[in-house]
Image (tube, rainbow, N blue to C red; front, top):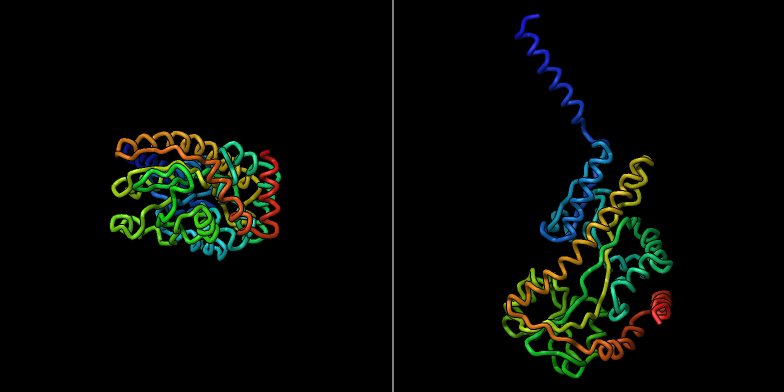
Length: 325
């Protein structure tokens, strides 16, 4: 064989081998969520993608779609149920199907991240998760902590009486509305996209959100104080469609679950560092952090919370409180 033919044969063999190595994946997971590319949730999703693709030897491809590219949170949930998407990151919205998911974001239910973790990873958390599986067809495979919701305003708020007459934007969550009414504020449900302009124009005086959203929405430009109410400590689930998961052979199910465990640990590390960064960044942007009498807020809020919950929700709420005493 001539040198030219030999080189050609070698090149052809190399291309053939590369083609075989890059065979199409057997399964594809479409993972859509609402966070931006820089958000810790998306960084965790990309970690999951890397682990699954590597440890499945390319048999599974994970396609991550941040920034609501596959639709809003509710739209992606519906898509998973219909089989046109496979994974998402979701929280208390699940209560539209599974009432116990309301406990994922209840005002003044937890005093610390550690209390919340024990509940999530204990029997009560398993009960909530099982109802999500039974009622939605979604399988939670990991959980992420959300930063506590804090109150921003243009006057310092230290005790409930400081809220009198405060026009406060809240999301359209009845439990949140009733809680802030009980605390003495004037809560107004409003789309998040309208909040900055409403604060700028004085239509509302204040809003409440985790530090991450306070930063990303540039509320430091229209609000002076971050009042550390810590009024809601909550978590969200990374979920996969149960039907999709069941289609995977057992060895690939293990790959997905192992990657989910590592994703969860990775996100928790990022979360702690990001909370520290957020506080410093907002201070650097001129916001003042106010220490609040959280106990006074909690005591005044709890009767309204109890009244808003019912049946099995209230039973679990009381059980969580008893465990923390």
